[in-house]
Length: 269
Image (cartoon, rainbow, N blue to C red; front, side, top):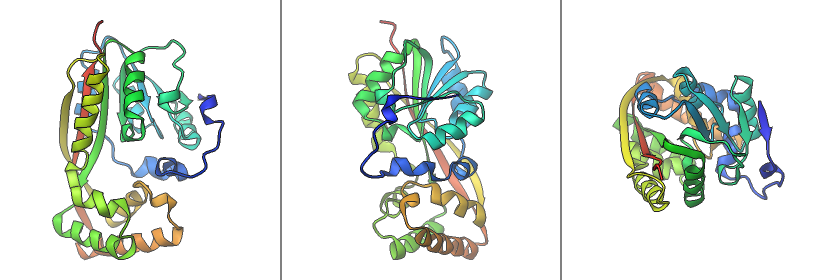
């Protein structure tokens, strides 16, 4: 089920990066890394119930993990293309920006957001989270950060520097590695605290690995922020360069992932 709200009525004058992820939902769903089961289990443990709100649910990657853990999940997603993909796979979705979304009296035992909270207005988002969570409910906002082997990271950076020197993947992602979200976690915890509605926020992290072939990495890389806004010929050229570097490294590699989370429990009063 997809529910469209009035939040989608007005067309935006430009296409920000956040709107580009829906260009190819099937590819996004296929290529994007998942999240550790330990994270899901830790969020679910101790909840007052099993109702979960997935903010920026996209194609339903996070939602399906919580459904598999026995939760009833509702998604909120501003991109109709992503929402339709998720709905076709059994996730009820309201199409809206979370800050403007009308919960219509509904309350939840957990609010989760995987790789999406940085697109939400931090203050309005935290206030909305406080409104829709039951006492004892948990907000859990998390991201996957990766680090490719050092030599390969340098080779990838050279490709970006040559073809797209201003792209954020070069300016921030490859340089920062698994620490890319650290400042954002601290600021998000501060905003949750400032609502007065949550217990002291915690930061969690889970380290894991994933092996990639040349084709798997060049399938994933165009789903990174901003690539879908580039001319297709430029993306093709970029992926050819990236793929050649994976070939030079033996045709495959192992990426070191760190799933990082900021989480807090809704106060009882």
